[in-house]
Every structure is written in structure tokens, then in C-alpha cells.
Image 1: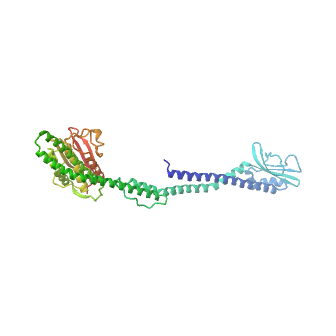
Image 2: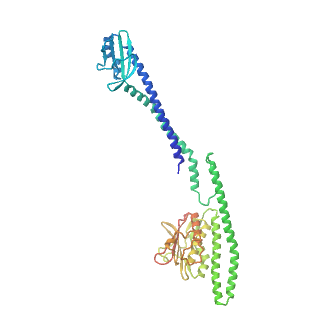
Length: 448
């Protein structure tokens, strides 16, 4: 995947680097040209201003200014009256051959020279200088010129980096807002965006609107279907119970009992579909401060009829009634901040699952404990437990373990997970180690 930031920076900084390279070559070329003109002029001036008297020239060679010129490796030779050998050399080891008047560029003894010859009455003056001196000066001039340009380029690089990052900040804000949204938050995005980003925001809002409409239609269908099924199924249940009471044939009564069990499961499925649809469409409300022990006691009281019908011992345990329990089930309230409806739904489905999967004569214990780790609720049953490979998938909708013997529909724990995520609670499942059964723990309660 190509990064827009890296793409922009690569092209902008690459273009800047190319421009800097071109500017460096141009500046060096101009500096070299200026140095050449400057030194050519200096050579002419030196040839013209050389004293006519050789003795005076020798005295001038001892002058400080001439010494400074000699430091630039300027060589001077003078021929008088067309003599073959120079009558004057400076420095004395100078051996540049005599050339025609004017400027010349030659290579002598492996060194490249710039030579100027001046034809004067009764004498010929020749001044020479190594090209390397000019190149060195050109590099110095180019360096002095390029240093400010390089500093400006660094500042421009930082500015380009800042501008690109700031220009793409709207995309980062958009991605963060989308990443922080929950799966159920399909409200349109409201944000100020540049003209280039606005079409993306508009398209996303259109997609969110269509997704919201689709989910609403699905929830409405499930809720309507569950509601329409519940009433006729309940009436059919009553009629079946009347038929069971009037039946005298044992075989017929056994068939009616099987039908009754299947009908009970269908009614339970319709109720859980309706509960799941409500949770999907649930609008978050403010949490309230409740006594957790009172909520647990009320849910157990509502499910006690189901437990008695199945001959399951359902109750609250405290210190001494279960391993590791504390004395939190005393008369003192245990205040937590939760959603009343969500807390009841969560407990109802967990305890109802425990009762359904616990065989007759079994036991379901509910414990509220308060320790240093925080407040938690334990629901412990004597059922068959869940295979380790199924523990991860039991929260999926309509998933039931292959060895499940209860009349469950596979939706109870799905509802539990949805409610727990909304309330920011943690629900963990573990098989009991010493005996058969499942241990469900609810933790993460906020204390007011």
C-alpha cells in the first residue's frame, strides 16, 4: 500500500534535492567563471604595473604586497630586447616557456597554467598562475554562496514536512474517529474537512446511513417475528397442557411430552430472539448506583420457579458455603454503578443457562464477593461443563456444543457478551477442576 505522506514527501523533497543539485552546479560554474575573469584581470594588471626597471622589479618582489601575490603562486618572467633567456624570473625557479602575447592555457611539467603575455617596448613580460588556484577560489566562493542556500533548503524541508503532515491531518482525524466508534454507532460523521476530504466523508455518511437502515430492518424483522411467534406459541402450549391432562394412553402421553419439550424450546428461542433484538437496538442510558446483592437476589427469586420445576437447588452462598467465598453476602449492601436493565439481563441469562444445563438434583450457587481485585459475581453449577475447544465459540450466536443436552437455543451467551461489552464488564468461563460443572465469573464493576 502506497503512503500518501511518503509519496508527497518523496516527490517534494526529491524535487528540492534535484533543484539544489542544479543550483550547486550553476553556482560553481558561475563562481569559476567569475574567478577566471578576476584572475585574468589580476594577471593583466600585474603585467602592466611591473616596473620598467629590472632592479625596481627586484625591489618590488621584496614588497609585502608582491609577497602576497606570490603566495598565490604567480610566476613572472621578463625578456629584454628579444633575448632568448629571461632576464628576470620570479620566483627564480620559474620555467614557463615564452608564448605569444595574450591569454593562454597550457600544461607545463604536469601542471595546468594560465599565462598572460604582454609585449612592451624593448621587453616582453609574461605572468603565469596555476589553474588549481582558480579552482580553489571558485570552490570557496561556491561554498560561501551555497551554505546559506543549504540552510534555507533545510528550513524548507522542515516546512514541507510540516505542511504535508498538517495537510493530511484531516485523514488522521477521520481515521481516529472511525477507529474509536463502536460497531453499533452508525450516526453520520460531523467534522470540518477540506474540499478534497469532504467527498470521502459524504460517501462514508451515505454508507453509514445504508448500514443503519439495513440493521434497523433486520432488528425490526427479528423483533416482529419473535413477537408474532410468542403469542400463538404460548396459546399452543396451554392447549398442549390441556391435551396432556386429558390423555389416558401412555404412548400418546409420551408423544405429547416430547411435543411439549420441543414447544418449550421454541418459546424460549422466540423470547431470546426478542431479547437479542432489543439489545441490538438498545440505546445507552446512564448508569445508576444499585445494590448488587439486591439485584442478584431478585433475579434468583424470579428463576426459582424454573429451578424448582427442574429440581435444581438454586441459591446464594456466602462464607463457608463455597470454597474461597468471603462474607460479602451479609446484610450490608454492596453498591456498584451499572445499568439496571443491562445488569438484570446479564444475570438472568447466565443463571438461566446454569439452571438449564444442570441435571435434576444438581446445584447452582451464586456468590457475590468483594476482594482486593474488585467486586465480582460467581455462578457455579453442577452441569456437564463445556469442552475446552468450545469455550471460545460458545459466545457466538446459535452456537451449541455438540454434546449439549439442554433445550437451549444458543443465544443466551450471545446476549451476555453484548450486554457485558456495552457495560464494560468482563465475563469469563472455566470448567471446574475437582468436579463436573461450569464456573462463570462477572468482574469489572465500577464502584461509585
